Each structure stands twice: as C-alpha cells, then as structure tokens.
Image 1 (cartoon, helix red, strand yellow):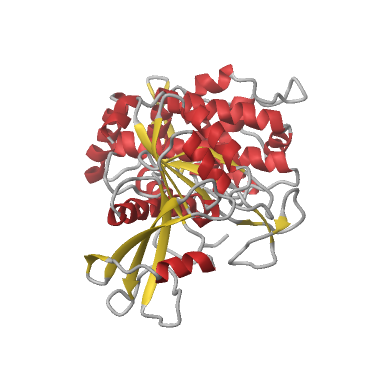
Image 2 (cartoon, rainbow, N blue to C red; image 1 turned 45 degrees about the vertical axis):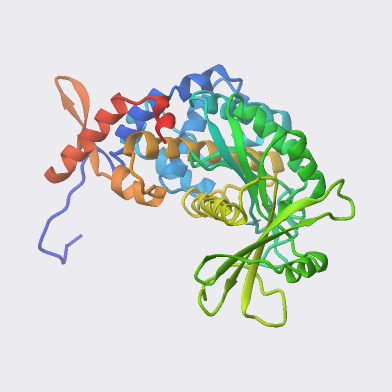
Length: 436
C-alpha cells in the first residue's frame, strides 16, 4: 500500500504490546488481597472436559474484562487477544466468549448462594470490626429478548419493557456491596427483604449495623417489625397515602432548620401495624429552594414534602440529615450500570445471569478497596476515571538479563506518582478500613 500521509512511517512489530500496562500495578494489589487463594479453595463449577479452563482463570479474566470496560460477554475478547496482559496475570490462555457463557450456565441456585455468599463473607472478614451504616436499595435492569425472570414490572424509564429487579445492600461507610440478589422484573422492592437482610447480617458477621436506611419501597409493616425484632435502628422513607397526608397537614409546630426548610413529626399506626411509630417530616419552600426534593401534597404548590419512619430518638432535622447521605447508594448503582456493565452480562438462564451479576459485585468491591487503600483520596474516582488515569498506560514486554520486563510508556513527570502507588501497595493492609 502506498501511504498518502508522509509525516511518519509505519511497520509491524512482534513485540507484545498492551494498552493496559497499569494493570501490572493492580496485579500487585490483587495478589496482596489474597482473593486468588480463596478462589482456589472454593469448589467453583468445573469444566466438562480435562482440556477445559481453570475456573479461577475464567473468573479472573471475567473480572478483568469488567475492569477494562467490557459490558457484554462479546467484550471479553479484548482480554483474550492481549498477550502482554496474559503474561502480567500469568494466564497461559484466556477463555473465548462461549467458554465464559458455558461457565456461568453451570451455576445452579445452590452454587450461586454458596459461592458468592462465601466470597462476600470472606471479604468482610478481612475488614476490622466496625459499626456500619447499611443502605438497602433496588434498581431496574431493562432486558431485550426473552430471558428467564425478565418480566414486565415497574420500569420508569422504559414502561412496558421486561426487566430484572435486583436487590442490593450497600455498606455506606466503605462504599462496598455487602450482598445482592437478582430478582424477576415484576417483584416489589420489599419482596423477600427479611430473608435478604438475614443473609446480609450473616455475611457481615462481626460488623454491627448501627443504622439501616431504605427508600419508600421498603415502607412495610412486616419489615419494620423484623427490624425491631433484630434491634436495628432504621430510617425508611414513607410511602405517602391519604391518612399520612392528612396528618402532615395537621402539623401545627414546624421547626425552622434553614432558609426555606422546616421539620415536624407525628405518630402514625397503619391498620395492620402492632403499634404506632414515629414519622419525621421535612418541608421545603419552593420559592426559596427551587431544586428541593419531595412531593407536592396539597393544592397549594408552595412546599415540597418528604417523610421518614424511624425508631431513632434524634430530632427530626438530624433524621433528615442522616437520610440525605443515603443518596450515595444511587451513585453506586449508577457506577455499576455505566462503568461495570452490570446490566449487560445477561444470559437466557436466570441463575447464569445472577452468577455473572454477583461476579460483577465482587469486581466492584475489589476496585473500591483499591481506591480507598491505595489511592486514598477523599474524592472517590469512578472506574471510568481510573481506567485512563491508572490502567490505560501503553506498555510492552521486553527482555532484561533473559527475564521478561514490562516497559511502561509513561511521561517522566508521572513516573514518581506511579512508583508511589507501588509503594502504597507494598504497605497494603486490610486495616485501612479502620481509618475510613
């Protein structure tokens, strides 16, 4: 071919080049967590042939695909054909797309619960004992096609489309996922939540739940009874109904918190409830706070209202402030969807899809651990930022004294920062959590 552009020539090279040289640093961190040894001790689903892939390699290379931006099983090919990346992670070969899908199809319900509950339990056992804030949340994963459990239910962005409706428990203090379930799309937010919370508490083991927060989908009398039986303190958003609206309208004493913000409270007992419970209310004057959250409850659209049921003895303004911090779980869900592709790894079999879904959650926790223990910055960069800042560094495999060496193409000014990250990894300890 005769080149038209004359400023630079081009030629082929046999060098093993990768766009992801920064993963050498992450490999050092990954080894120090000890999760590979834990995977090897577990009975992961084995291949049907002696020539099949080691299931640990399948799991690791799947996580790698997620970390590098893959959001479909077809995207796993970018790891398969990266020879330098294989050498960094000591993989002789990487599975094909069909191998990944066959691997997850081997998961049955007992396998999903056993393997991922165990992995999450092991993960949080490494974190020093602490009191945590647990946020329960659910989201909608829209599906296209005919997958098991993909049913029509609540779907605000794509009404009428089939979906899955997963349930997740976030450890707010650590920005990590404690537990997750994949559920059918027609499932309500609070369906099965008592059993889910019991499993979550088993996973968290020696950690004490100091506060549980959840949105209005979990405003259910049976669930509140369960929380009180477990002696858990909670703040749960209230689902507005005519009686609650009437009681809010009857409040005569409002405490001013800030410009345009007032708080009140009252006791409320729904028909099936065994006792009355405290409801804290915040109203915000739209004229002064046009971006206020909440709903208009009455004909006069001058205030937006929010309400929470709680067993805390704190004043209503403090209840409001504590609940506002729960918004960070929405950021975690957004990152899982757009950076970790949690809504993309879908198979026809329900438990195969749940296995890939919960695998992504483990990949998320490892990145969250890396952000806090190694990067250690107050501003928690999303994975999309970490890719170009830490991982996307052009590199190639060279030789030095007959040994393979990764040649990292990094600007001179950035080299001290990169070497500093290696130093932090050398000092890595799970005790980082005691300082967060």
